[in-house]
Length: 377
Image: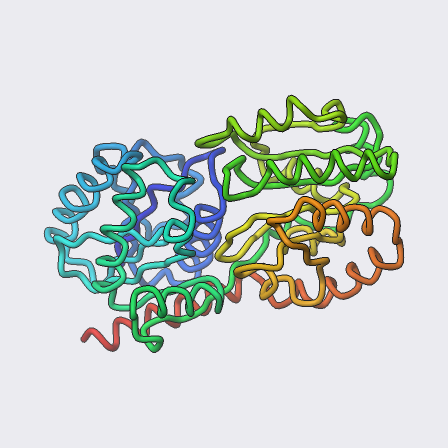
């Protein structure tokens, strides 16, 4: 069997949620199934670390697809031509994009449809592309995978997709995320926070991630409690950061906010593992991998009570209203003051984290691939 895969998001040192999902699933699947051939389709020169096994043939197709016009060119012309010529049995796309110009059976992984709810968070051209093409991709797909029951129901309701066409396959977390001992925690805090405890946020600094309100809430919590604690923000800058930076500049306690930029996994797992708590307070998520990463490190989590986050967190996180600075500040204060609350969340998370593993994600993905091929024969 020959499977073509959209691997354009596998970029060394630049992988976020969807790319992390793709990396872990593809690594496990390709190694586990040496009897099948995989065509990895990149849009630029690739790093050898992404060629996981001998049954992978890497192919670079131009142009680099990082703009709506280039999305169309890459998927409809370059990928479409490759699929027609190579005639793979299946096209698997972990970021949801498909080629409408090819008739290859396909699986689209749709993580969420946030663009339908928060259009102002995207550049206008990208928004137009998503709203125009993603409904077509989902209609064309032989099968759809998504990462939460929330996202499945959202897709079904918004696009009138048959629920039987969609499987929920949860994300996992890297084994590098683990509980740190006290000596390790001390070393990390000395390096990043001048030895102080800290809340940690991990994700792109994107409007949808709600960092502006987190900064406001942290400032309010510091002002009301006098807590000697810092806030570390881990992630790259993104589109429309001016509101966030305006809030930052006006903070009374901005000296206690630390921006690290993007960190590689071997460093990120230490920063998460040494944290006092994880603050993951986005107002829209299809899943929220950092929630599970913190749980694996036995770090308590405060997260939002909307979209997929309550589904992922279960009873193992403190839920707050992401649209209320007061609710968020209250949550930060509770975690800071109430050690029994923190310990209770850690204990619940020790069970909850076992629900989410990349092995399980890969196995369910492979089951969906086999089912789709059988149905398309």
